Length: 265
Image (cartoon, rainbow, N blue to C red):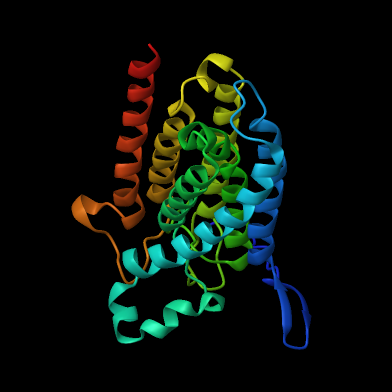
């Protein structure tokens, strides 16, 4: 028997009163949005100022819709297209789970662009401040994945391996915690460190590019330890869907950074 750490079984439902239930996963979304919103209200006022706190208040509704619509549509298109072709109405069953970060990111980009145009903002500069708080939501989301005992890692013999309730008898990487660390804590620290430089803040696109490239790298590393979705498995050259979707993010991030340097160099 390999030494393993006991999985801390936590009920995914925090509170349940009749048909009403509050789930940790929903709280993760709420915590990420609320904490990110409060911090972003301060970031948009750092020189050069890109928006008012009141505009950031209005933006919260836009970005929430972008996250939900984009995340769900991305999951349907990227991960389960065959299934939803036969049952398209189930794409609306958000309570059944299934959200894609890459789809959510696209939804946020569209929402930010539309909001920027409507309010006559430099939407790229505005996005630079917004992306700095996105890792907060990523951190809470991965912690919720861990609590739910889902999206577990590959079979391993490391001393901190865990046996997940839905992952069979084999000990596995707690990859949700790895991803919370890299996609959440590390990426947040990097972006806030960069954002402290007024010179970087004055170059629209640098922070957005750093987020896209940074997330793409962090996600690709996390996918090395995470078990691929059973219905997809390993794809091109042994890569996972998460890694393949991260490649365009890395390229787009590098392009934004280089473009910003050329524009302001």
